[in-house]
Length: 187
Figure 1 (spheres, rainbow, N blue to C red):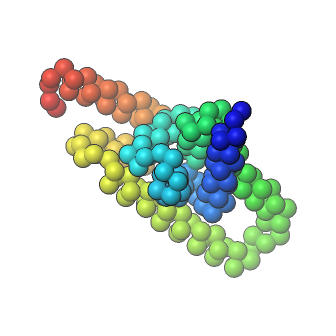
Figure 2: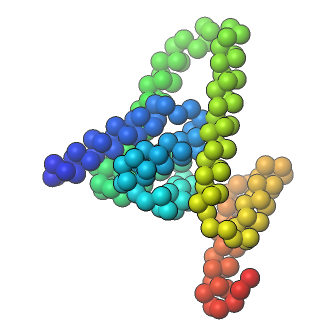
Figure 3: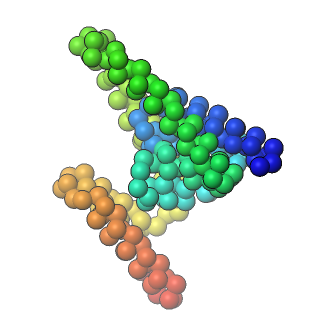
């Protein structure tokens, strides 16, 4: 392997290690950091590609943070880049959970610990909402997309519908709409 690709893998590992270490709340909370570190600071991917990467990451099995890191790493440096980015994003959580597992039982009843976790939950909600707003700004305005998103939210959030079936139904509607537009018809 050439030195440039190996150096890129090391940098990918470092960037995703940083993202994994300083983000609580999972993949959706990581989106603003991934965007800033990978697209804006490094310029490794273009801003417009973020939505595509997220769509692929959400559509494949597994956590969105891991899928996104793997996809970005593979796109930039092949299989070794995918491995470096994935290990980087997972390692901080693994280490923290491993260490906390030894002491959390002893401190979970303390009010300060309960309040700290409440504060973390609030921060996670804010990060997820930030990701939603930034994705909505980047997404081209399309009435069908917004109707599908709202319908999926209502079905899953309020009626407990199977999220996989809702995802598949939305994909089929999107494909059908795309075919109709390609054929010259407008919805």
